[in-house]
Image (cartoon, helix red, strand yellow):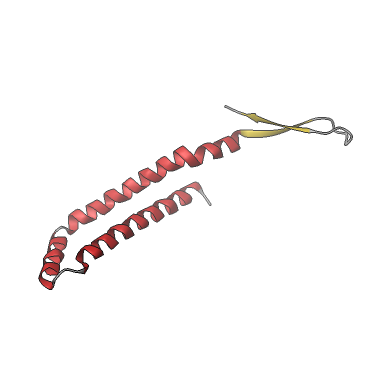
Length: 107
C-alpha cells in the first residue's frame, strides 16, 4: 500500500470516528425533547448549516494534521531507520567459519 493511500485511509477513519461521535452526541441532545423544542432545534441547525459545513471542513483539516503529526512522530522514524540500515555479512566464504552480521546505519 502506498504512503498516500495509507495516509488517506487513516485520515478518513479518524474523521469518520469523530463525526460519528459528534452525530451521536447531537442525536442524544435531541432525543428526549418535546415536539416544539425539537422543531426549534431543527430550525436553529438548519439556519446554521453553512457554519456546520465549515466546521466539518475545518475538522477534516485538523484530522489530517493529527494523522500527519502521528505519522511523522511515531511511524516514519522506524521505517526510515529500516530503510537506511544495511546488512553487511562479514566473514569467510568457507562453511567452517561462522559469519557475523553487522548493522550499519547511514546518517
